[in-house]
Image 1: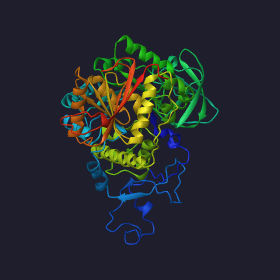
Image 2: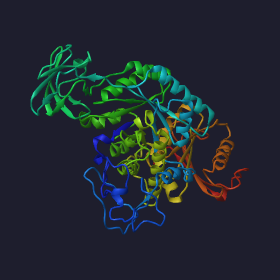
Image 3: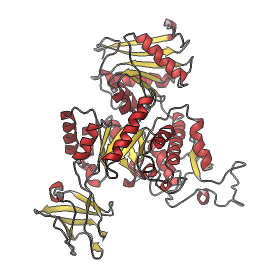
Image 4: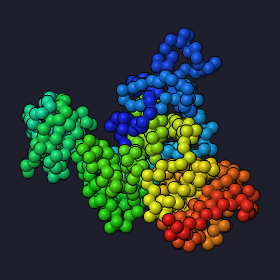
Length: 564
């Protein structure tokens, strides 16, 4: 799996024919001056009667006849019409749309603002799907408390779940103290040494003893969050010799990006059975294979998410994604059936302010439109003043953007990952096509989650309701796009289990009597079927309380293993 940093520019998330609908005004505290120019007495002539002061934006469906669009130097968006509302209106929309499950999942970083039992529960109700533990902050004791609270929450519900993601720290490499800043110029030679107390015009100390061992000739070092970059040219036993690629002013104790294994934190995750590792500063697939080999030896069922955080990872992107269980450059991930998270600075202004900027709302909308499995909050929920509002804003913008996409979604899923030699992939593709054409939700019973994940990658128009008798599978599926995982014990009687599942969906008002649903039985482990057959079935929900099956209301397709 992967995580995409918005700081790497939203241009990586663009698709053909997309135009920008908002100017990127990171300093804007409201949209008034952007959209209400030329208005008199604080009211815009085109605004609806009784319009509120504008503090947030809500994207609505595309207007085909609109000829004009707004552009930005940072990224581009679909040219949509939009509505302007008060922040109270935007936050309250999640209540009115709560019956429609959100497809794009929300990852929340847990910290001092949200580490209590009360806040974990409130975050979950507001829309959190994954609790992220940032190992750069806090200690094992505080993170253990969060894990225990999440487990307590999960134990209370069959149809609600929070997954746990442990985000490794990466090495805390910083340059040493300097009497005054050093100006690094492009092309000059500059050195980092593990010797203590060195501070000259061409060499400074770093605080990480394995620094020389961890970097390789040809690596690109990013200094101060990417403000400066240096290419590694050679090494001695205690010094890394570099050439400045992007210059700047080097000050005391600036952060350097380098890889570390974080084995102590990884073992902590194994002991606590977390669901995902997010591995920092991955430059090639070697570190991913190394970690997965370790997890295999520990018999740990934990998936790996890689974080692409530096430019030198891009050349190895294909191999990194292939080695991981998900990734973050969206189109590449989709083509390789890897889930993708878009992270960093999504609602950064809401750390200190109760409303988002237009640029932040735009970023969320683009991530949703491009098909991200999940979007992430960091400081907003870890130590921000308005963690619940941040989650509600993200939830509402995602829901409204997904609603607009339903009007333009094609019936046939992208077929680039279909291989006729893989029956499960074929079944998932055709089941998605059928569900899209008929407008039905999908229902899957699984012990491994494999078919649910395949269906998720095809992005069906409707929700994928996944019933599993494995709690670990339920938790891991929480991060996948469009999947609603539900824990249920299976009986030997397929019809009895199906009846209970449908009754639960109807009672939760997730489906309605009289509508059709598409049932899929396929995947790694057969349940109530011969191993050589795969079922895709459409049923009309009538008399669910009795669940009487009528041949006239069912379409049954049995696909033999060799029917290719």
